[in-house]
Length: 110
Length: 115
Image 1 (tube, rainbow over the protein chains, first blue to last red):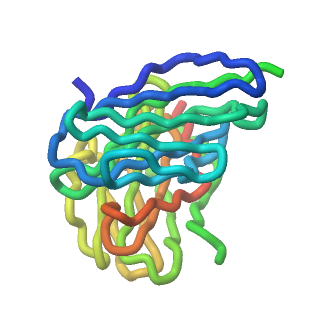
Image 2: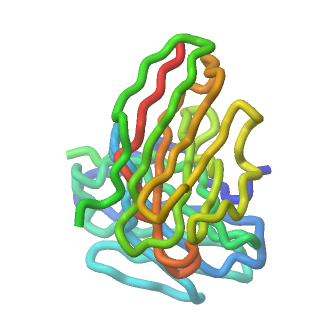
Image 3: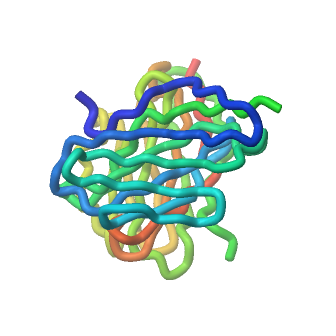
């Protein structure tokens, strides 16, 4: 079992809708969680960081963390076609290194 | 800031040849990571350096892979001999301190094809 699990998708949403991306992790010692966006043929870029239970908002993006359930999510409000990409969830492990999930491919249809 | 710089962007080589990938981290970053990305296995951590010292190389697939960081501004990942299953995109990333509370900044990657 991978340490960080994501549904590979694709997740298809219409333009203007809310896209909800989910991630679970197995290491209860993980303290830091990140969402990266990766366009096809490009490198991952950080879009959100979250370190404590609850919500963290940045513009159209909201990251949610529930350590009891070992669950992290990313909400994208007012989805745009330019949001179409693969979203990678990452968590630090006991060795303080980042482990990435397999990514969820998001498609926003105009 | 120039960001993390990797070279070459693309590398095509024949099985059995030596391949060397290069990385220049962001100035002031003291942690450097090498990742490999494939469709089947996603993004895998190969090795992690902190202050030029290898901290964890448990992700290095086998002895054919080696990595060095002779100084704070340069690292190499070498594959010798290369095999077709090594074909992947190899990313270098850097951060300040470790990845905890410090986001990784990725280079543009090297797409390696071994025929």
